[in-house]
Image (cartoon, rainbow, N blue to C red; front, side, top):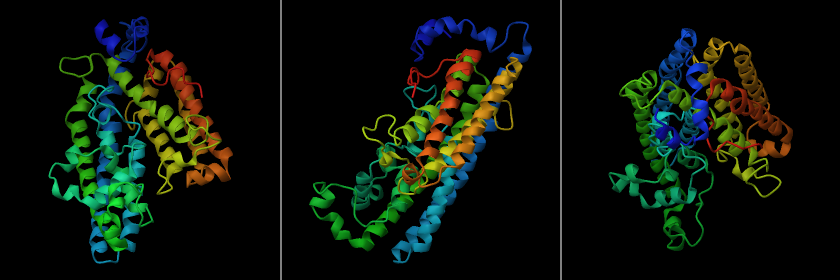
Length: 398
């Protein structure tokens, strides 16, 4: 890695001093083939043992979801769709449960194109929360642009696509829309003209189109990992790889783990608890998945995804690398903290927004347990492996 590249890799000049020790500490000294082999195995196994199996499961669930939503659409056209809608809701829950594990895996094509090596923004195409706009979704329900424009899903904003848009379409119980009175679908009477049956029918129709596009994006994400990104990690440091060194590739996997800090702990828990970015004693309206009431279960799935990435699935993971560096106690500590957070998560009932009121202590306990994980990530784990934490978590002490 060149000095200019390191300086521009959102890690800053402070990383240069630490970088000199990476080869000795992580990749092993010249006389330490065990840690060199462990690092190579972690990178080689990340794709086939962690990411690809997760995306394969998600694609299967996305296909089931598309089928269930199509059945709902067909029933809605006949005016009787309660059972089919319930089946589609269940299919959505199943797909979302897998995707919440995958939320931790924002490496390569799922990642942000501005900050992640090989990033392709596919995460936001599949699930953009907290970026979602129910009013815009209802406008699409009225105007049917997705039927008339062949490139609609190539140009539409992510706030009307994906699993979060499907959640709204599947679970919202009112025939009213989410737009203010001055928005055209209300001010010009287009929404009222649909009538309740028309609203239900066109929501189901738009949901079917969104589900079909979701399945395509799931297929694309899996294909990119299977055909390219997995090999890019495995050959890090070699000519042709997007990763200029094995250390840079390992840091990309490490960065992904901080979803548990930035999103799970801070956005999904601290904000609803009123600990940050709230302005009130609590902000239950900021809970994830309000329409389906599944916010707590999402947090538990995030922890499953984190543990799988840390241990490398059925292959070699960060835990094995730490053992090779004679830091087995640190590996065991990390796994114990994840297990403790999973236990705390099981005590938090859905809907999360109601538990915030009825059993705030359990939500606070989960927040504290996540903090124990992220303290270790930012502290001993980063120091031992000589890895840099993402810039947007540095100095975060809540």
